[in-house]
Amino acid sequence: MGSIYTYNFPTRIRFGPGARHELAAELAALGIRRVLIVTDKDVAQLPWFPELKAALTDFGVATFSGVWGNPVVSQVNAGVDAWKASGADGIVAVGGGAPMDVAKAIALMAHHPGHLFDYEDGHCTRPIDQPIPPIVALPTTAGTGSEVGRSTVISDDDTHAKKIIFDPQLLPRVVLADPELLLGLPAKITAATGMDALTHLVEAFLAQGFNPLCDGIALEGIYLVAQHLQACVDFARRSQAGAVFDEATAAAHRVARGGMLNAAMMGAIAFQKGLGVTHSCAHALSTVFDTHHGLANGVMLPAAMRFNLPAAPGRFLRMAQVVQPGATDGQAFVDWIVALSASIGIPTSLGALGVTPDGLAALVAVAIADGCHPLNPRPVTETDFYAIYQDAF
Ligand SMILES: [Zn+2]
Image 1 (cartoon, rainbow, N blue to C red):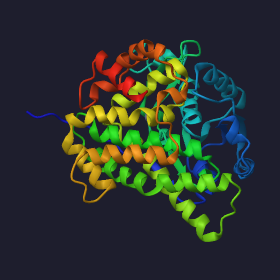
Image 2 (cartoon, rainbow, N blue to C red):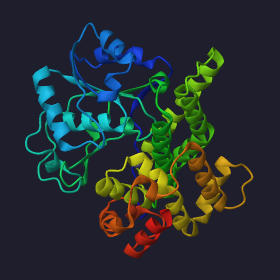
Image 3 (cartoon, protein in one colour):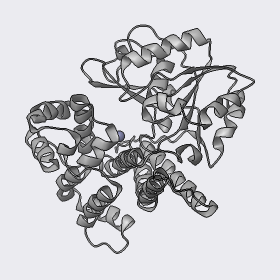
């Protein structure tokens, strides 16, 4: 008998400019009366944030904005205190991957005892058997796609080790994907988060296993990145330089941001199939050097793909033909990644991230223990990890 596989694409997504204005209606439809808004310090300063809150006149509203950098357990604990003080019955997660992940962890710990890491995926010492409050997500970056994912990644405050907590109930009930929330995103964050989305799509498409639904989503997502990431970064650069856009340019900016918002969600949907060696390298960089996750992926992706190309030339050819119709070999896809990275300002070497060669052994030790590379299309040994990191220097 053959194997039986699972596919899941369950999230309700409302996509389009102005989707954020539906927040009150969506909360009411879910029966939520009081919300805790979970966000980060920067988002809480943005001009549309007070408007978002002001529109919730029929609801009790409390805000927790104690999220920054790579999210850690102490932020979750502070958020759980805020949850308990608020008397809320639902969570609104507003922000990039960090607030999304902290919001999910707060939702889990709202009614579960013990320490967050008691619920680590694969090492669970306590059952997830209590109610988890509903989450409505408003992404403000196009990167992790955590708004359509059912896991959260939180680091230990001291060791920086990343732990994954997984439960289907952590999936937000509704995503309000509003490109207007991304219009002010700086070029550097646009580029780094965009490379995270691209890495999810590429690694999902290359991952071992059988999931043609994810493969199809991954290829279309790669197409959207090819269409829109460069444009998003260009608009961000111009706007940071003080340009004021006419209506046609502003409309093109919204289209580009919307393209990347979808690409990011598609990446997170596709990587239920699996990820690969780039993410193992990136997780180690965040653990050892506290590197931004998207930036780490962006810097590692070319070296990781040079490593993978010989193991999956047919799959690389298909990705090449998505970004460059008429391409005749998979190398063209690797070349495209290198060119895109350079033109959106991703550093070309680990040295530019402050990573030093004497940290190599520590990086390899974390990367080899990471859970992503076992599904990489080419098996990765310790020697391979050294070679891939060295290639990225
Ligand atoms: Zn990622």
